[in-house]
Image 1: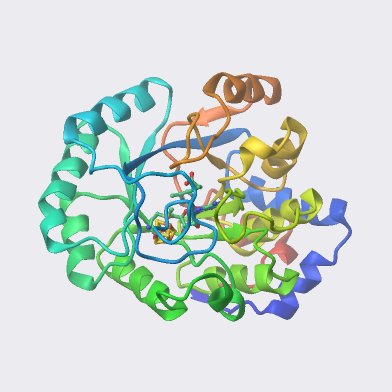
Image 2: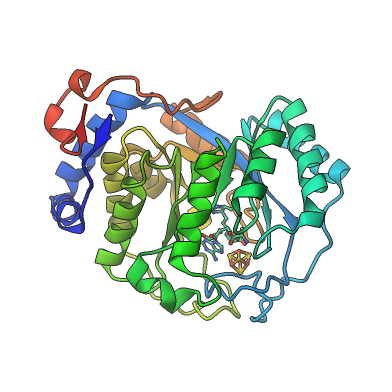
Length: 337
Ligand code: SAM
Ligand code: DTB
Ligand code: SF4
């Protein structure tokens, strides 16, 4: 299947649609490819917290900012298994492990491989986010059985240098290439609310959608403003604009899981429901993200009950319908079969 690239002008046309038309279109695409009442849930665990050498301006774990997040030693494998078992009992199908590293070092690889084996033995999907990967390290993780690798583009190429100076946009794209070539699934998205323009948000989606194939999983984070980070005083996002970006992500990447990621603690139930309506079909579940708060599990269970949402067992990124079978073909201008 060949893919006709998206551009920002096309994305902007979607952005400028009346809100109802945009959400309706996104919901049509969503229903053509996914169960509209199913949400996949992943649980996050920070396996190495704080003291990161990078300077990402949003991040409470950078050693450069005084955020109150203290350095913690690498978690023991047993501690990780205990947390993964608990996540599984709570209904998570994927266990995502994050490390505040620029990149994993050779000495870390045996530990990471052991962790992947142990979590997979529980019958869960595995995801890691450890920073940059070269081809060799990506292959070692894939060989150990890692299913997904999370590495976000975070923002547009244009705005990127306002946010991070210690690694480049192309470094990020190179890591994604290594992940893909090693045979793992890509989880890549970004953060909204860092002072970027609308066109930066759209350009980030264009970069993601034009990966061939697009990421299997696309986390859309709303900035969690953490005291001590340079972005602690960033302006509020207009909630409807956040939902618009979810909808456009769904339309541009019809087969991907779109994850309503960080920032749910700051959203009310109605806002989250609109995000699901617009095509989000994955969340992080559990009262903590990496270092910041996420909604309590009971609150999410109540919300799912109110909305009649089922937890999907394992998210299947395969299409439920080809573009031809989709209800309204005009919603697939970018895909030529
Ligand atoms: N150190 C690794 C890296 O940067 O690739 C992995 C962990 S890092 C915390 C993973 C992602 O979390 C970042 O790329 C960013 O998108 C997201 N993130 C970090 N701090 C955030 C915040 N305050 N609000 C929203 N998302 C955040
Ligand atoms: C992603 O896109 N969001 C998650 C996960 N990938 C690793 C991380 C959110 C972190 C929010 C800030 C914190 O809790 O430290
Ligand atoms: Fe380090 Fe990742 Fe935070 Fe950047 S986002 S400072 S690389 S932990």
